[in-house]
Image 1 (cartoon, rainbow, N blue to C red):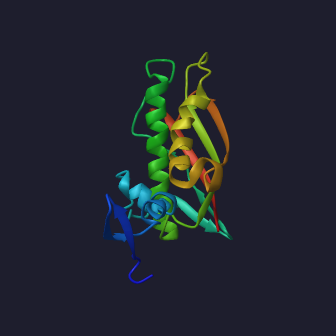
Image 2: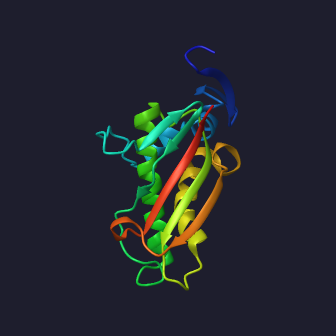
Length: 177
């Protein structure tokens, strides 16, 4: 192929036409879009972040291990906040994790999501922690594939309180492939 294009003739109503055709154009874009490009397309902030009191993401061997990342949404699930509110909070945590991972590793590509720990500030009778933390899992599935490198182990736990009253805190472990 020259310049990624193949020229071929197509019969159109008895007339042969010449078209610029790349049989892999849609396939390549859909299947081989990188996790980082998908994140950018979703509008996720991957800008540099200043160092803080603790390391938000550290490389150890072939793993990236994150600190807990908290939502900006505050409140108690089952005590004023809905499962949908919690789902959004968990997704927000996952977006913050991706920013920290990109800052440490330089890219979101070439990674496998290994494990998530989701912490939910919840009322004593609240039992939908797993549905809340789906907000984080679904984003990782969206970027890395549900059946591929995004398929991860996970714990979703309820807590009597989280720092500063945030609704959700999530931490993650990634493998560098």
